[in-house]
Image (tube, rainbow, N blue to C red):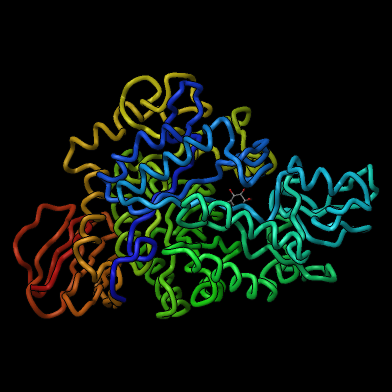
Amino acid sequence: MGDFLWWRDGVIYQIYPRSFADSNGDGFGDLPGITSKLDYLAFLGIDGLWLSPIHPSPDKDFGYDVADHTAIDPRYGTMEDFDKLVAEAHKRGIRVILDMVLNHTSDQHPWFRESRSSRDNPKRDWYLWREKPNNWASVFGGSGWDYDEKTGRYYFHMFLKEQPDVNWRNPEVRKAQLNVFRFWLERGVDGFRLDVFNAYFKHPGFEDNPSKFGLRRFDQQVHVNDMDRPEMMPLLGELRSLLDSYPERYSVGEPFVSTPEKTASYAGAQKLHTAFFFFFDNTTGLIPKWNADHFRRQMLDLGKAAGNVYLPALAMSNHDIPRSASRYCRGEDDADAKIAMTLLMTMRGTPFIYYGEEIGMRDISLSRKEIMDPVGRYYWPIIKGRDGCRSPMQWDDSPNAGFSKGKPWLKLHPNYTARNVLAQEKDTDSMLSFTRRLIALRKEYGALRDGGILFLEPSQKDVLAYLRLSPQGTILVGLNFSSRARKLDLPPGDWQPLLSTSARDEKISDIIKLAPHEVCLMKSS
Ligand code: NOJ
């Protein structure tokens, strides 16, 4: 693949800005707070930051209901603060990716205010208005259509009723949306994460979706008419040309209701640079799947779909789902969180770390009355919402974990007195030291970045083992998912341990006995 490209070969870190670092004591994270932590991110070895939305928002969906795409929400700071963050990040070789939420706007966005003001307003057609609803549903519960008393019509919203979907078929909308990208590109932003981009276009005749079995109304439909429309492709081409007219700019799509094939269809030449593959399609079930075979199969399917066309963006955690450490670990034991981090860093793809994942942060638990997320409020107690994974970053053991001098907007995890950055920086066995070491190994060994991947066939259950291969050398990753020791037959040759959660430094040949939950990376020598 050649030279190091930050967005393909680097490690990207997702920040949920309101929970990362608060500089002015209002309990709400902000841009100067992020700037003050750039040295930490550089120390970790991060190449790019993705900021969840920082635009003005009434916060019905915690920033994903944007009221102005080309401004900064004053709670996060000013445009000058933003420019400073970008400049300081660049000084440290860290790129900045913004979250573009362009499938919908807030109902408080000036476009929608105009659109709903009368049936003959020039912006009426900027949103999806109908005399009668069809069967399309809202992800957040109920019908996707809301009746507007004043103009006697229904408008479509795939998410909350305060998040009306825009009409991307209208040429003026398309132009205005592409101008949003242009605005930020001109300010020096390096890339964009596209929120639910595959829902931009809907069926022109608003045909009903076919039905299928599912628990929620949204899941009881096959989403052929409200997403994944072929009209998406020319738009992706146009966006790509715009990005390519600036040096080293990047786009990563969030394919909604995703499969490896779908993800792959949107990435490559004249399309997006890449698209997410989430290792947590299993989290809607009560018991997340945690076994070697599950990950092996997912990675094989993804590899088959992506081929050599693009490198998938990989994530184990984000702001929408329980953190990987909460899904896979028991109590405060990080053994399985280290396996999850190793998968993220050594499988074929570009890793995205969710803030706090590097210290094994766990979800907070909330009572019903503490829930803020609309998803949790609607579906409680079946789905408890997404607040759990959005708690403030745990920097140290001082009051409010060093996140804020004021009362945090969301409660902290009580484990912060022991689980925090400061404590883990001093501990060579910590999750943080382990993550840092993995990132450093990715930098050192090209095989871990762009090498091929070959899965071994271990003779014992619960072992996942694969080779990352490149002309410069081979790395073997061995993971023991079991709480018992397991044997792994090694390919011929001597293997030199590079990183292990058991004490190992001797060369190994023929066979390795992996300790319970051991992670072992070895290079052939
Ligand atoms: C996907 C985002 O990740 C999620 O947080 C948000 O609620 C929806 N898109 C709607 O924007």
